[in-house]
Every structure is written in structure tokens, then in C-alpha cells.
Image 1 (tube, rainbow, N blue to C red):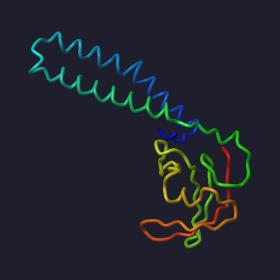
Image 2 (cartoon, helix red, strand yellow; image 1 turned 30 degrees about the vertical axis):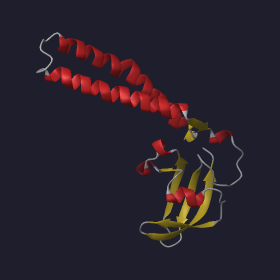
Image 3 (cartoon, one colour; image 1 turned 180 degrees about the vertical axis):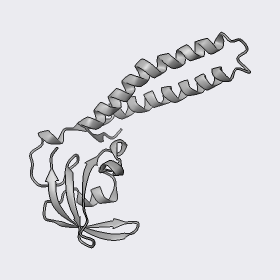
Length: 158
């Protein structure tokens, strides 16, 4: 399977979620199932069925996270040389040439992306257009709303 790029912070968040699921959520649901079993007839026991369903979700998420971590290629951009080039993990300052709006995006793995926090997926149209470009370059980004030109004002290795 292909390696999936991930930042150090992204890996840390997944590991913390995995620890919580295994150390807190899983034991809580197992205890809830055991308690529901004590109430007798399982066919009509809503608590039992709800707990079993929740257990299924938790086990599925644990498997999903473990799979992602096993295929992760963790990239610590702070340890890479600062060349002014846009690469995975950097924070890019952009100037929208049409509106003069300035934005900053950090290019992260798909699971880490959150546009409200300024984190865009490496597979997004903006990130794909920016990768490999340098400070001062003007980049044309094809978006569903039309083409947008951005000037790369800064590339930060944070």
C-alpha cells in the first residue's frame, strides 16, 4: 500500500485518539455491555444493543487509525532545509491577485485538513497547484468557482 504523508502533529493527534479509544472508550463500553447483560433478556434490551453498536464503532475506528498509522510517512518539515519552495508541511502565505485578500494555508495530510484552521489537504486543488513553486511565483488555481491567481508571498517551515 502507498505511504500517506502526515505531519508530526497529525500523527500525534491520531496516536492520542487511539490511546483514548483503547484505554478509556473500549473498557467503558465493555463494562456497559456486561452491565446490560445482567439485566436479563438480551433480545429486548436496548441498553445492550446500543452498547454493542457503540463497541462496533469504536473497534472500527481503532482499526482505521491503526491502518493509517501503519501507512503513514511522517514528515517533520522543521527539519528540512528552507529553500523557499512549497513542499508538504509548510505554511504558505498567499495573495489573491484578483481581490488582494491574503490567506495562509498549511499543507497537511488528508486526515489533518481543516479549512477553518487554515490546514488544506495535500490533495486539494490549491495545494496541488502550489507544490514545487517558490516565493514570488504566481500560481493559477483551478477551482469549482473558476480560476484564481495567487502570488506566493511566504513559505514557512513551522
